[in-house]
Length: 254
Length: 254
Image (cartoon, rainbow over the protein chains, first blue to last red):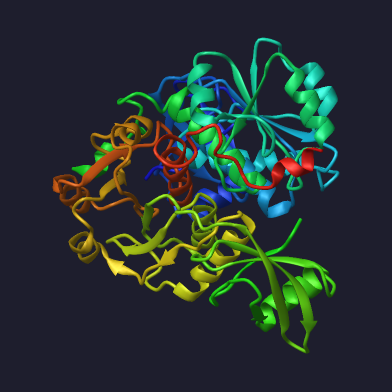
């Protein structure tokens, strides 16, 4: 298994990339890679590049790029807006949503949202690490936390917003996602305590909102986020075709 | 919100149920319920019953049952077999699979499975707690950890086994689950390191096995478990109909 790292720098033939202290520690001490060992790099623009560890400095490493391993591919266009939940569970949302290919993570302050502050840098770091492990070629954008009404005012009118509604009328998740296949989409998950009735009323009146139901069991907020994203990817995203498989895994079969 | 507790005892009109120290602590100190307050009880057989706290003892409580709140409903018949992963992540599988309505949890030892022991009691406790929170009327059965070949020998021949395969040919998850709707089903998730090639070969030869793909990103084992279960419930389980909604939530709208 070749360790993969996200970097900000441009990637191209013959280039050399300097890794920071954290990433150097990761490949040297966690992954135990020696000079000359292969590393994969991606930046969200230039595909994935294979390089080798050319120099280990005190708190840095230099990777010499050899060749492009994969060209850049567009990620599915799916956003996740979510009311913040407490620490382990918000970390979980960032990690799992990234694994599930989300393109944008947007913390949204609803009336009953509990933590009033969100550490955007922390969420971004979790998303980067998850992207490295999940073979993605990009990382999700993490937006600043926004009040619900402001977020709705900013929401693009041509982008469907699937609102996970525990109460009131709702389309079953699979039906809703098949019906809106091919459109730009986003998912909105309320806080642990649910949306306030007035919030749900206001949401339902918006022309781009589709209220969806996730079945008869009451789901925790972070579970709802994963379920809705998983269903979207399987039915309207990039999980629907036979050749949609993780890269490089067949090598392990022979 | 009425706290819900799973108990072993039979539930019926006029009965009194004694709670153990843990559950007493939960309703008294965590949920801060007073004498006379309502509690919901379920046991997987008699539906959900409403009672009130009649006596607080030193380390126990007595609930007097008043009326049945919901009759017993059959849960969807979906099993989850999974190679054990490390602590936080195996806890996560037990919690999320229970939220997603799994009827049986079965730890399976594959060649690359990492922890060699599984704490079944711990997993059961997590599943019970998740069932209480998710409004289920039953708890999943947790089987003892079993070697893969033994598990396959015991697997009922009329039950489809969806094997999440990272490599080789596989049907997209949604297609596979729609195609086998209405049949008893189970899902098998490999360990972090994946199935060994020989294991995957042997699995593919079994007539009840359907290899499925979960899209182009490499998922962690616990994410794969949630994705496969979520898709099954949405497409072949109890999440597919409009009236499939969490109970009691509409009360919060008015």
